[in-house]
Image (cartoon, rainbow, N blue to C red):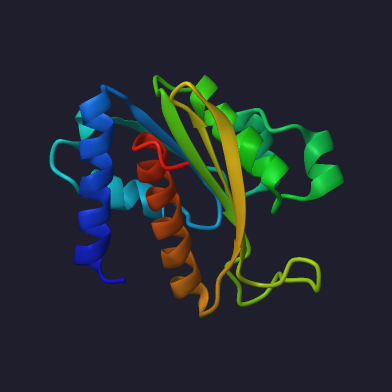
Length: 165
């Protein structure tokens, strides 16, 4: 997906948030702020975007988002359990009513047989709905995996805002 398509998706997300009077916060790991970059590329996004947390290390996830060290030890950083704690931490530590989180293995190294490169976990929290999660297995190089994860998170946010969850 090119920059124009990402921008269009971010605009659609912004319109859905604005229509509901919601503010967004993000918690990103393997995407390194790519979703926040797409969102803040939209003029006027300050009306519906509060902040983004880029918590790449496990320690940052614990310190900034309140992720449990025990959850990290039990499930690993790339897990739906950690994605949930990241999304909830972003909700708690922001002015947002809606959050999304991403944690995964973008590669080219770091994969295991249980969690190969391209494994990315997502969570969406807030907006008066139960927290939801999914895990995807993307193909491609590091940049392609990160882009696919960015698209998945924004699409998931839009779907939830439009009642398609």
